[in-house]
Amino acid sequence: MSPIPLINGFSEICEAYDGVLCDVWGVLHNGQRPRRGVVEALTRYREEKGGKVVLITNAPRPDKHIAEHLAEMGIPDSVYDDITSSGDVVRQHLIDSAPKKVFHIGRDDNLAHYTDLPITFTEQDEAELILCTSLYDRRVEEPEHYRPLFEELLKSELPFLCANPDVVAEQGDTLVWCAGALAQLYSQMGGTSIIMGKPYAPIYDLAKRKLNAVAGKQIAQDRILAIGDGMPTDIKGANAQNLDVLFVSLGIHAEELGEEHSADDVMELLGNSGLTAKAAIPRLVW
Image 1 (cartoon, rainbow, N blue to C red):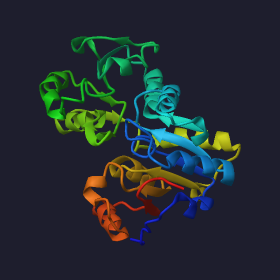
Image 2: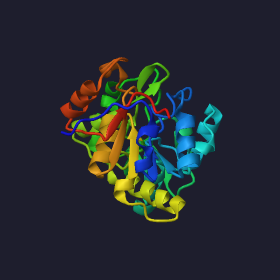
Image 3: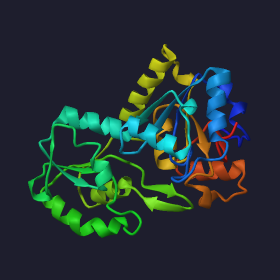
Image 4: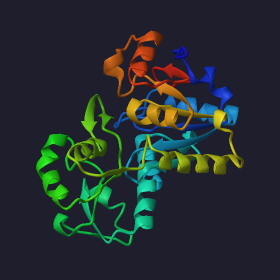
């Protein structure tokens, strides 16, 4: 494996790239507030270097709702040109596959983003598909709480469509469970899980189409940089797509690495999972 440098600022490598696919949760914010320096870093990349930025997130909500949430959090649209979410590709899958009756697992506010589609949300005994957007209450629940429900759902062999492949995400200073953890459990119990967000190809295909659209040209593969903090999603996905990736090391893996980690520590952590990165940076700053 080639050495992975630990850089101090995005400005050290940004000129090698015409476009960026940037993770949101863990890179731009921690679920409660923006990361220090990230607004400056991406704004300067766009305004001073002419780079294009498409945010790519495993959130189960469509892109316009992500934009609203970022604005409420104090992250301006100067940071990005467009947004691609797991919710976008899942909505398209539901349109294309056209299930008639769907059982939803997750918060009601997530369900609201799908009720305009030509499908009926119903109870589990009538459903032909499960749509999972989140845990019902991630503040108090863990995946194992869902085992009895899954045992019943598996009797009907219902496929499990996961709208947020993240297993965990930051919520302030803690980590909370996401829908990806439920998809893992469902699969472990013998069920079929359908996952379209990171690290899988559909979300990258859509994000690259959007990146080319805002650039007004086809950006060469080696001129696109992915930025993310999650090894099972951001880094694995970028590696699978043959994209260079900047690993934000003090995201969800901060506890594993420690605040004062080295480039060798990053190499070991990624290497243990068979992953690599073009470079690592503790936080996305200029």
